[in-house]
Image (cartoon, rainbow, N blue to C red):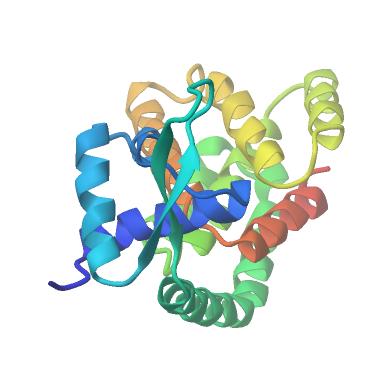
Length: 227
């Protein structure tokens, strides 16, 4: 039995849930996190257990005296597999980030002298050719900042104040998306709106794949470029 990409995706979610909660993972919790049936999740964790990537444990069921339920924790084999991948990913991003950041800030510096029709296409081009999820996220936030800078000063100040008081990290990055989407929906016409909507969908998905270091760098970029 091989560790297919699908099994690897389930394993990644188990590890992330385990790190987040510091508790063994029940297959129903995994099913909700991925969006599959509990039976699909259960079959998958059993396969991962056979491959040596998960370890089965038994804990008492909440509210059920004397009854236990099956839960799973990642094995050392699983943790080593993903630690290696995350380390390689972080090193690659560390090398790429200064150049990406400088290019985005330089492009943003031209916003005041250009309209949306001139400034948006370069961002869309970079987004479509981003070499990593983190680079995609950085260019995506640059594009959102472009739209925010089209607002009147009072509205922009209110948004900046809101974002500055939100906890740093994924919460603030997610809030920025929701704030700008309403603005974009009334911006440049239906075709562009659909493009941005597709990009937002892709970014929301990519947020689950970003490392904590990438999230921190993106949040720092947001503060430097906009707050």
